[in-house]
Image (tube, rainbow, N blue to C red):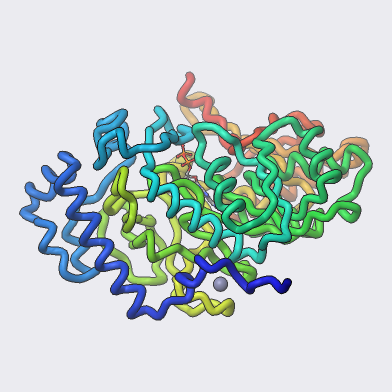
Length: 438
Ligand code: ADP
Ligand code: ZN
């Protein structure tokens, strides 16, 4: 039997803009009304502004609504933003807490169906189908990655291996013995697997793996190039966040040219992170998302803190849902070093530019005599480690120059022994800030 070009649910990726806008407006009006009626915080804020649900007559009217922030979830912890009684809630998840106390989110049965559907569309967009064997190395836990990807892959009709994160030896055995064709994980954990495969003397050429579905943390195009050339697979970027649904908010398609947002379920805006003013399409700013179909916790104009821009040109894949550019950082990721704003992604890109084969790094910030110091630790390979000292010194200098060129600051680069930077099974810890400790 032939294979359909995409999952039936993917039809929504190809709506005309008129159709899409009609669906969006209808859903927006419904979600705003539900939120007004059942979430005291939203009602109070709307009343303060004199906005009523019936004032939402067009999509542009969304600008009249107040923003929601991560802190709103913390302040109403655990269930304060739930718009449905607990008897309607069939699952809870929590954020991994990259930036503080975790927040709790809930799903109704319908919410789970939507989540499954957008994840099936995600897998379909990167070219997977029922013939694929998907190793799901996202953590199965309160973290949304594991179960989100799991049900989406099942709905696609693929064979799912619910291995979760960790136990690298077993991951490799499964990848080989079960004929795995696609893997889901954070990009940093996949790198760790790559090393382990190579260390075991096996090559990627002997595996069936052809697709990587990576997300949950920022990574660069340079990192993608490194992963692809080292393994021969195609590596795709997917995006999501617990507060909105989990993974399944946006995905790349086979063009690998920005991530399509599932706009029939998530309405996107880009705002100036400082003023909150709406920016024009194409301008870079903070992504703000409104859940159009979520029942348990409707999120209206949620400030993601993630920085990106909308790609206005149509995609060669034919999908009409718009794309956002790769998310290179979030606004709270920014390191301020001697007054200069620096993002980890800038460092990553600079390092890989100099030496594309050294993807493991960590940034350590400290303060010496009142002055901020930034040290970038980079792991070298075994072979390099045995090289002449002069060769290593040269490499170190070139890396220092490359970073200085990009961020305009002198930094210290320290080349460290292979495997001396801790590996993570989930999100990598790229920055250690010792300034807060001292
Ligand atoms: P936490 O905020 O605790 O990390 P989540 O697990 O919900 O909780 O993480 C969501 C965040 O992870 C996003 O807001 C974004 O900053 C980051 N993220 C997820 N996917 C990507 C991606 N593909 N590229 C860059 N950042 C991503
Ligand atoms: Zn596309």
